[in-house]
Length: 387
View (cartoon, helix red, strand yellow):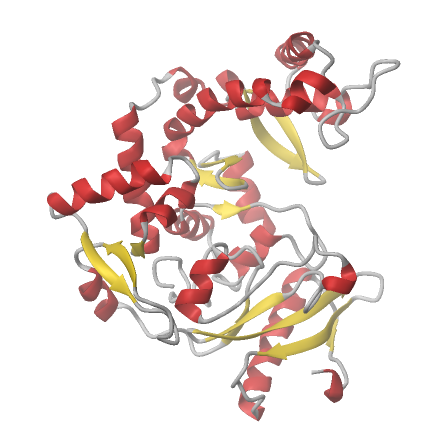
Protein backbone atom coordinates (compact mmCIF):
# COMPACT_ATOMS: atom_id res chain seq x y z
CA UNK A 1 0.00 0.00 0.00
CA UNK A 2 2.85 2.35 0.71
CA UNK A 3 4.47 1.62 -2.64
CA UNK A 4 1.15 2.31 -4.37
CA UNK A 5 0.58 5.68 -2.72
CA UNK A 6 -2.19 4.71 -0.30
CA UNK A 7 -0.36 5.66 2.91
CA UNK A 8 0.44 9.28 2.00
CA UNK A 9 -1.82 12.01 3.36
CA UNK A 10 -4.65 12.37 0.80
CA UNK A 11 -5.33 15.91 2.05
CA UNK A 12 -1.93 17.15 0.81
CA UNK A 13 -1.81 19.72 -1.97
CA UNK A 14 -3.02 18.26 -5.29
CA UNK A 15 -0.70 20.02 -7.71
CA UNK A 16 0.22 18.92 -11.21
CA UNK A 17 3.62 17.86 -9.88
CA UNK A 18 2.00 15.85 -7.08
CA UNK A 19 -0.20 14.00 -9.57
CA UNK A 20 2.79 13.19 -11.77
CA UNK A 21 4.78 11.86 -8.83
CA UNK A 22 1.80 9.77 -7.77
CA UNK A 23 1.48 8.18 -11.22
CA UNK A 24 5.22 7.57 -11.27
CA UNK A 25 5.10 5.96 -7.83
CA UNK A 26 2.29 3.64 -8.94
CA UNK A 27 4.03 3.01 -12.29
CA UNK A 28 0.96 3.85 -14.35
CA UNK A 29 -2.72 4.59 -13.94
CA UNK A 30 -5.17 2.48 -15.91
CA UNK A 31 -7.53 4.41 -18.20
CA UNK A 32 -11.09 3.21 -18.66
CA UNK A 33 -14.06 4.51 -20.61
CA UNK A 34 -16.90 3.42 -18.31
CA UNK A 35 -18.47 6.54 -16.79
CA UNK A 36 -21.19 4.96 -14.66
CA UNK A 37 -20.02 6.82 -11.56
CA UNK A 38 -16.72 8.32 -12.72
CA UNK A 39 -13.97 7.05 -14.99
CA UNK A 40 -11.62 4.67 -13.21
CA UNK A 41 -8.42 6.70 -13.66
CA UNK A 42 -10.00 9.70 -11.94
CA UNK A 43 -11.27 7.48 -9.11
CA UNK A 44 -7.79 6.00 -8.63
CA UNK A 45 -6.13 9.40 -8.40
CA UNK A 46 -8.82 11.11 -6.31
CA UNK A 47 -8.72 8.29 -3.73
CA UNK A 48 -5.08 9.25 -3.10
CA UNK A 49 -5.39 13.02 -3.56
CA UNK A 50 -8.71 14.42 -2.37
CA UNK A 51 -8.27 17.72 -4.23
CA UNK A 52 -7.31 16.08 -7.52
CA UNK A 53 -9.08 17.45 -10.59
CA UNK A 54 -9.52 16.06 -14.11
CA UNK A 55 -7.43 18.79 -15.65
CA UNK A 56 -4.34 17.65 -13.71
CA UNK A 57 -4.12 14.38 -15.66
CA UNK A 58 -5.23 15.99 -18.92
CA UNK A 59 -2.45 18.56 -18.74
CA UNK A 60 0.22 15.94 -18.00
CA UNK A 61 -0.93 13.87 -20.98
CA UNK A 62 -1.92 16.52 -23.50
CA UNK A 63 0.15 19.66 -22.82
CA UNK A 64 3.22 18.88 -20.74
CA UNK A 65 3.50 15.38 -22.28
CA UNK A 66 5.27 14.10 -19.19
CA UNK A 67 2.91 11.12 -19.45
CA UNK A 68 1.98 9.16 -22.57
CA UNK A 69 -0.90 6.82 -23.23
CA UNK A 70 -0.24 3.23 -24.19
CA UNK A 71 -0.83 -0.38 -23.27
CA UNK A 72 0.28 -2.22 -20.14
CA UNK A 73 -2.28 -4.92 -19.36
CA UNK A 74 -4.76 -2.32 -20.61
CA UNK A 75 -4.73 1.29 -21.79
CA UNK A 76 -2.76 3.34 -19.26
CA UNK A 77 -1.07 6.67 -18.63
CA UNK A 78 2.68 6.06 -18.19
CA UNK A 79 5.64 8.38 -17.40
CA UNK A 80 7.32 9.43 -20.63
CA UNK A 81 10.77 8.57 -19.28
CA UNK A 82 9.97 4.89 -19.93
CA UNK A 83 8.80 5.35 -23.53
CA UNK A 84 11.80 3.46 -24.95
CA UNK A 85 10.63 0.31 -23.18
CA UNK A 86 7.48 0.28 -25.28
CA UNK A 87 9.55 -0.18 -28.46
CA UNK A 88 9.97 -3.95 -27.97
CA UNK A 89 6.19 -4.08 -27.53
CA UNK A 90 5.73 -2.10 -30.76
CA UNK A 91 7.91 -4.58 -32.63
CA UNK A 92 5.98 -7.59 -31.34
CA UNK A 93 2.58 -6.02 -31.98
CA UNK A 94 2.92 -5.75 -35.74
CA UNK A 95 3.52 -9.44 -36.34
CA UNK A 96 0.92 -10.48 -33.76
CA UNK A 97 -1.85 -8.33 -35.22
CA UNK A 98 -1.14 -9.28 -38.85
CA UNK A 99 -1.08 -12.98 -37.95
CA UNK A 100 -4.47 -12.86 -36.24
CA UNK A 101 -7.55 -14.23 -37.94
CA UNK A 102 -9.63 -11.09 -37.59
CA UNK A 103 -7.02 -9.00 -39.43
CA UNK A 104 -6.59 -11.41 -42.33
CA UNK A 105 -10.29 -12.18 -42.70
CA UNK A 106 -12.04 -8.92 -41.86
CA UNK A 107 -9.62 -6.54 -43.57
CA UNK A 108 -10.32 -8.45 -46.76
CA UNK A 109 -6.68 -8.60 -47.80
CA UNK A 110 -6.53 -4.79 -47.95
CA UNK A 111 -4.90 -4.07 -44.62
CA UNK A 112 -1.87 -2.39 -46.18
CA UNK A 113 -4.09 -0.10 -48.24
CA UNK A 114 -6.06 1.03 -45.19
CA UNK A 115 -2.88 1.54 -43.16
CA UNK A 116 -1.32 3.65 -45.89
CA UNK A 117 -4.52 5.70 -46.32
CA UNK A 118 -4.71 6.46 -42.58
CA UNK A 119 -0.98 7.22 -42.37
CA UNK A 120 -1.10 9.57 -45.35
CA UNK A 121 -4.12 11.51 -44.11
CA UNK A 122 -2.68 12.10 -40.64
CA UNK A 123 0.69 13.11 -42.12
CA UNK A 124 -1.10 15.62 -44.36
CA UNK A 125 -3.93 16.85 -42.13
CA UNK A 126 -2.60 16.49 -38.60
CA UNK A 127 -4.28 14.79 -35.61
CA UNK A 128 -7.43 12.81 -36.47
CA UNK A 129 -10.01 10.61 -34.75
CA UNK A 130 -11.63 7.43 -35.98
CA UNK A 131 -14.82 9.34 -36.78
CA UNK A 132 -12.86 11.54 -39.19
CA UNK A 133 -12.67 8.50 -41.46
CA UNK A 134 -15.83 7.40 -43.25
CA UNK A 135 -16.83 3.86 -44.14
CA UNK A 136 -16.15 3.04 -47.77
CA UNK A 137 -19.28 2.03 -49.65
CA UNK A 138 -20.05 -1.65 -49.28
CA UNK A 139 -17.61 -2.25 -46.45
CA UNK A 140 -18.52 -4.30 -43.41
CA UNK A 141 -17.36 -3.13 -39.99
CA UNK A 142 -14.30 -4.98 -38.70
CA UNK A 143 -12.58 -5.79 -35.40
CA UNK A 144 -15.29 -5.81 -32.69
CA UNK A 145 -17.52 -3.76 -34.97
CA UNK A 146 -14.77 -1.32 -35.93
CA UNK A 147 -14.47 -0.01 -39.47
CA UNK A 148 -11.17 -0.84 -41.23
CA UNK A 149 -9.83 2.67 -40.69
CA UNK A 150 -10.32 2.36 -36.93
CA UNK A 151 -8.50 -0.97 -37.01
CA UNK A 152 -5.69 0.65 -38.98
CA UNK A 153 -5.46 3.52 -36.49
CA UNK A 154 -5.15 1.08 -33.60
CA UNK A 155 -2.62 -0.99 -35.52
CA UNK A 156 -0.45 2.09 -36.08
CA UNK A 157 -0.83 3.04 -32.41
CA UNK A 158 0.07 -0.42 -31.13
CA UNK A 159 3.11 -0.51 -33.43
CA UNK A 160 4.30 2.94 -32.36
CA UNK A 161 3.81 4.94 -35.55
CA UNK A 162 0.96 6.92 -34.02
CA UNK A 163 0.54 8.40 -30.55
CA UNK A 164 -2.57 9.52 -28.72
CA UNK A 165 -2.28 13.29 -28.33
CA UNK A 166 -5.57 13.83 -26.47
CA UNK A 167 -9.04 12.45 -25.89
CA UNK A 168 -12.26 14.12 -27.04
CA UNK A 169 -15.31 12.67 -25.27
CA UNK A 170 -12.88 9.86 -24.46
CA UNK A 171 -12.24 9.18 -28.17
CA UNK A 172 -8.57 8.93 -29.07
CA UNK A 173 -7.04 11.65 -31.26
CA UNK A 174 -3.97 10.29 -33.06
CA UNK A 175 -0.90 11.98 -34.56
CA UNK A 176 2.42 10.76 -35.92
CA UNK A 177 4.76 9.79 -33.08
CA UNK A 178 7.64 11.42 -34.93
CA UNK A 179 5.82 14.75 -34.52
CA UNK A 180 4.69 14.18 -30.93
CA UNK A 181 7.91 12.71 -29.47
CA UNK A 182 10.54 13.26 -32.18
CA UNK A 183 13.65 12.46 -30.13
CA UNK A 184 12.14 9.43 -28.44
CA UNK A 185 10.77 8.17 -31.74
CA UNK A 186 14.26 8.22 -33.27
CA UNK A 187 15.99 6.67 -30.25
CA UNK A 188 17.06 3.02 -30.30
CA UNK A 189 15.03 0.36 -28.56
CA UNK A 190 16.65 -1.19 -25.45
CA UNK A 191 18.26 -4.60 -25.78
CA UNK A 192 16.55 -7.67 -24.37
CA UNK A 193 18.62 -7.77 -21.17
CA UNK A 194 18.17 -4.05 -20.50
CA UNK A 195 14.44 -4.32 -21.13
CA UNK A 196 14.05 -7.28 -18.77
CA UNK A 197 16.08 -5.49 -16.09
CA UNK A 198 13.83 -2.45 -16.37
CA UNK A 199 10.61 -4.48 -16.35
CA UNK A 200 11.52 -6.51 -13.26
CA UNK A 201 13.28 -3.87 -11.18
CA UNK A 202 10.63 -1.18 -11.67
CA UNK A 203 7.84 -3.69 -11.02
CA UNK A 204 9.43 -4.90 -7.78
CA UNK A 205 9.87 -1.32 -6.56
CA UNK A 206 6.10 -0.96 -6.85
CA UNK A 207 5.11 -4.40 -5.59
CA UNK A 208 7.91 -4.78 -2.98
CA UNK A 209 7.20 -8.52 -2.66
CA UNK A 210 6.21 -10.58 -5.71
CA UNK A 211 6.47 -13.86 -7.59
CA UNK A 212 8.13 -13.92 -11.04
CA UNK A 213 4.66 -14.18 -12.59
CA UNK A 214 3.49 -11.08 -10.72
CA UNK A 215 6.59 -9.20 -11.83
CA UNK A 216 6.00 -10.14 -15.47
CA UNK A 217 2.32 -9.22 -15.33
CA UNK A 218 2.87 -5.80 -13.76
CA UNK A 219 3.81 -4.21 -17.10
CA UNK A 220 2.79 -7.19 -19.25
CA UNK A 221 6.06 -6.56 -21.08
CA UNK A 222 7.99 -9.82 -20.60
CA UNK A 223 7.32 -13.52 -20.06
CA UNK A 224 7.24 -15.08 -16.60
CA UNK A 225 10.16 -17.30 -17.63
CA UNK A 226 12.28 -14.18 -18.28
CA UNK A 227 11.27 -12.76 -14.90
CA UNK A 228 12.22 -16.05 -13.22
CA UNK A 229 15.71 -15.97 -14.75
CA UNK A 230 16.10 -12.34 -13.69
CA UNK A 231 15.07 -13.18 -10.11
CA UNK A 232 17.58 -16.00 -9.85
CA UNK A 233 20.38 -13.76 -11.11
CA UNK A 234 19.35 -10.84 -8.88
CA UNK A 235 19.36 -13.12 -5.81
CA UNK A 236 22.91 -14.19 -6.67
CA UNK A 237 23.92 -10.54 -6.92
CA UNK A 238 22.29 -9.67 -3.60
CA UNK A 239 19.83 -7.24 -5.13
CA UNK A 240 16.72 -9.13 -4.02
CA UNK A 241 16.02 -11.83 -1.44
CA UNK A 242 13.82 -14.95 -1.50
CA UNK A 243 10.94 -14.91 0.98
CA UNK A 244 7.87 -16.96 1.87
CA UNK A 245 4.60 -15.05 1.88
CA UNK A 246 1.74 -16.24 4.06
CA UNK A 247 -1.84 -15.73 2.97
CA UNK A 248 -4.05 -13.21 4.76
CA UNK A 249 -5.70 -15.81 6.97
CA UNK A 250 -2.77 -18.24 7.10
CA UNK A 251 -4.76 -21.09 5.57
CA UNK A 252 -2.95 -21.31 2.22
CA UNK A 253 0.54 -22.71 1.89
CA UNK A 254 3.18 -19.92 2.06
CA UNK A 255 4.09 -18.80 -1.44
CA UNK A 256 7.76 -18.56 -2.50
CA UNK A 257 8.36 -15.01 -3.65
CA UNK A 258 11.08 -12.36 -3.91
CA UNK A 259 11.46 -9.07 -2.08
CA UNK A 260 13.62 -6.00 -2.02
CA UNK A 261 16.48 -6.68 0.42
CA UNK A 262 15.50 -3.75 2.66
CA UNK A 263 11.79 -4.55 2.82
CA UNK A 264 11.85 -4.73 6.63
CA UNK A 265 13.47 -1.30 6.95
CA UNK A 266 10.96 0.13 4.47
CA UNK A 267 8.09 -1.36 6.44
CA UNK A 268 9.28 0.24 9.70
CA UNK A 269 9.58 3.65 8.04
CA UNK A 270 6.07 3.65 6.60
CA UNK A 271 3.55 6.05 8.12
CA UNK A 272 0.36 4.77 9.66
CA UNK A 273 -2.54 4.54 7.20
CA UNK A 274 -4.66 7.70 6.98
CA UNK A 275 -7.44 7.38 9.60
CA UNK A 276 -10.33 7.56 7.17
CA UNK A 277 -12.48 5.47 4.84
CA UNK A 278 -12.07 5.65 1.06
CA UNK A 279 -13.89 4.28 -1.97
CA UNK A 280 -11.47 2.73 -4.46
CA UNK A 281 -11.64 2.32 -8.21
CA UNK A 282 -12.49 -1.19 -9.47
CA UNK A 283 -9.10 -1.02 -11.26
CA UNK A 284 -7.10 0.26 -8.32
CA UNK A 285 -3.48 -1.02 -8.49
CA UNK A 286 -3.79 -2.92 -5.21
CA UNK A 287 -6.80 -4.80 -6.61
CA UNK A 288 -5.97 -5.27 -10.29
CA UNK A 289 -4.44 -8.69 -9.63
CA UNK A 290 -7.49 -10.29 -8.02
CA UNK A 291 -5.65 -13.44 -6.87
CA UNK A 292 -2.93 -11.35 -5.20
CA UNK A 293 -5.55 -9.16 -3.50
CA UNK A 294 -7.28 -12.26 -2.15
CA UNK A 295 -4.03 -13.68 -0.76
CA UNK A 296 -2.71 -10.45 0.76
CA UNK A 297 -5.95 -8.78 1.89
CA UNK A 298 -8.41 -11.66 2.11
CA UNK A 299 -10.61 -9.61 -0.27
CA UNK A 300 -12.42 -11.57 -2.98
CA UNK A 301 -13.33 -8.91 -5.53
CA UNK A 302 -14.80 -9.36 -8.99
CA UNK A 303 -15.57 -6.62 -11.50
CA UNK A 304 -19.03 -7.42 -12.79
CA UNK A 305 -19.78 -4.81 -15.46
CA UNK A 306 -19.40 -7.48 -18.14
CA UNK A 307 -21.23 -10.17 -16.18
CA UNK A 308 -24.91 -10.73 -17.16
CA UNK A 309 -27.19 -9.05 -14.62
CA UNK A 310 -28.73 -12.21 -13.13
CA UNK A 311 -25.26 -13.65 -12.50
CA UNK A 312 -23.87 -10.65 -10.60
CA UNK A 313 -23.14 -11.09 -6.92
CA UNK A 314 -22.99 -7.41 -6.07
CA UNK A 315 -23.59 -4.99 -8.96
CA UNK A 316 -22.51 -3.41 -12.23
CA UNK A 317 -19.80 -1.05 -10.92
CA UNK A 318 -19.07 -1.93 -7.30
CA UNK A 319 -16.48 0.17 -5.45
CA UNK A 320 -14.30 -1.46 -2.75
CA UNK A 321 -14.29 0.21 0.67
CA UNK A 322 -10.86 0.82 2.22
CA UNK A 323 -10.84 1.64 5.94
CA UNK A 324 -7.33 2.58 7.01
CA UNK A 325 -5.35 -0.40 5.72
CA UNK A 326 -8.25 -2.87 5.66
CA UNK A 327 -10.68 -3.65 2.85
CA UNK A 328 -13.95 -3.92 4.77
CA UNK A 329 -16.60 -4.15 2.08
CA UNK A 330 -17.94 -2.63 -1.10
CA UNK A 331 -20.81 -0.44 -2.26
CA UNK A 332 -23.04 -0.60 -5.33
CA UNK A 333 -23.36 3.04 -6.50
CA UNK A 334 -24.86 4.85 -9.46
CA UNK A 335 -24.54 8.51 -10.39
CA UNK A 336 -27.99 9.66 -11.48
CA UNK A 337 -26.86 12.74 -13.35
CA UNK A 338 -30.36 13.98 -14.21
CA UNK A 339 -31.25 14.01 -10.50
CA UNK A 340 -27.83 15.18 -9.33
CA UNK A 341 -27.62 12.28 -6.90
CA UNK A 342 -25.03 9.65 -6.10
CA UNK A 343 -27.22 6.69 -5.18
CA UNK A 344 -25.70 4.01 -2.97
CA UNK A 345 -28.02 1.12 -3.78
CA UNK A 346 -26.48 -1.48 -1.51
CA UNK A 347 -23.66 -1.79 1.03
CA UNK A 348 -21.89 -5.12 1.40
CA UNK A 349 -19.69 -5.63 4.46
CA UNK A 350 -17.02 -8.32 4.44
CA UNK A 351 -17.62 -11.42 6.59
CA UNK A 352 -16.87 -10.61 10.23
CA UNK A 353 -17.09 -6.83 9.67
CA UNK A 354 -19.73 -5.15 11.85
CA UNK A 355 -21.54 -2.04 10.67
CA UNK A 356 -20.69 -0.01 13.77
CA UNK A 357 -21.79 3.60 14.10
CA UNK A 358 -18.21 4.81 13.59
CA UNK A 359 -17.72 2.58 10.53
CA UNK A 360 -20.95 3.74 8.90
CA UNK A 361 -20.00 7.34 9.61
CA UNK A 362 -16.66 6.84 7.86
CA UNK A 363 -18.38 5.29 4.84
CA UNK A 364 -20.84 8.18 4.62
CA UNK A 365 -17.98 10.68 4.70
CA UNK A 366 -16.24 8.76 1.88
CA UNK A 367 -19.44 8.81 -0.20
CA UNK A 368 -19.85 12.56 0.39
CA UNK A 369 -16.28 13.16 -0.82
CA UNK A 370 -16.98 11.11 -3.95
CA UNK A 371 -20.24 12.99 -4.56
CA UNK A 372 -18.42 16.31 -4.27
CA UNK A 373 -15.71 15.13 -6.68
CA UNK A 374 -18.13 13.96 -9.39
CA UNK A 375 -20.42 16.98 -9.02
CA UNK A 376 -23.40 15.28 -7.37
CA UNK A 377 -25.56 17.45 -5.14
CA UNK A 378 -26.02 14.75 -2.54
CA UNK A 379 -25.97 11.07 -1.61
CA UNK A 380 -28.99 8.81 -1.37
CA UNK A 381 -28.65 5.73 0.84
CA UNK A 382 -30.59 2.48 0.70
CA UNK A 383 -33.17 1.46 3.23
CA UNK A 384 -31.62 -0.20 6.31
CA UNK A 385 -32.79 -3.67 5.29
CA UNK A 386 -30.97 -3.36 1.95
CA UNK A 387 -27.53 -3.05 3.53
